[in-house]
Image 1: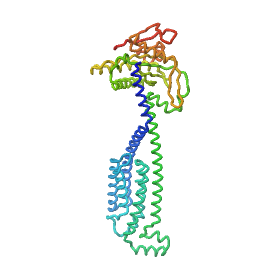
Image 2 (image 1 turned 120 degrees about the vertical axis):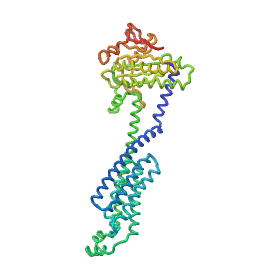
Image 3 (image 1 turned 180 degrees about the vertical axis):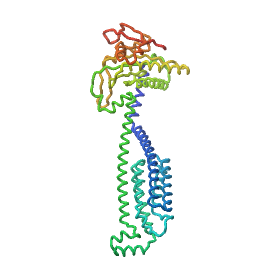
Image 4 (image 1 turned 135 degrees about the vertical axis):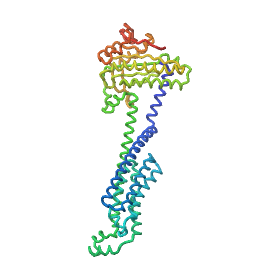
Length: 465
């Protein structure tokens, strides 16, 4: 392996580690999740508002089939329009435009319910509007706010609504033009000075009941705000879990990530298992990178690793580690599959095909070809976590060493892939894709450094280098 390439790869890994632990990166990831959640919530809230306004408009006609109901239909239309504006300008964090639109929402509601209906006959006291309990419709706005806004905004909606309703009540009481004859008739019917007469008086605003409405609304708003805050925390935690899952998917194939995320501590038990092992390394990288700009060397390594790891994951493999200008991958880890040896071989062939496609592009740009040697083996390994505080999933054993030696042998045999006879036998036993073995040539009695006995290996002749 080239020392310069190894150093560059270590710098890349260090940068990734810093980014993974960077709280700024975490906050950006969480902010993106919150933005997506709020955007979805705003769209849902607007749809819910439009449906609710349509239902209310029909309900108003049903309970009051008179022309004066058109006044309230106009208010409903304004609320629908304002909801669309809130959806358009809503964003995570502080938004003065959004807060202004929410304030206008509540103001439209308050004015529509407190101000006299210009289409209604003037033979009813203004206080009678409070008998209809229009204040209940504010709960629709409050409930919709929990779908899209932060807990602070939900509580602000409660406070603003209570303040507006109290102010509107005070103004209505101050400017109301009572009908004394109605009060006299009520007292005559129920007795002067009685509690029942006070309750039934058409000129009475029933202030204690109005205060009770405001108090209950505030309690509901605070409760919903606390619930929204708790949900935001759960969302932040979930964003962190998704980030961890995304980081995990950089090392394991998607099916393995699913297994890891659905099981408790599946990797901690050390065990022996037959797996496929693959080593790949760029041929002549030291010579190629000599005198090159370090930034261009890093770009080359990134492009190479990206193509190779894509094939690893596409063939249900696990990226064990980067090795400077190469990498190690395993197949059948952490859980064994029905075609691990076949996946190993198919991945090696796909890697060489990916390199061939890349080299065609490089030749068109006048750049040198990238040749790589691949060694693949199938055998028994030991799997498990190593480390104390910072754990690392490890695959060790003679099978790993053999695969690394087979990758080194590609230079001597002038081959692009060298495969052990053990892997070839397992591919035939699996019977999934025996045609993958067609282009391989047998080499008997090959000495493997570190092993006492020679091995039979199979190779595919190199087409570059």
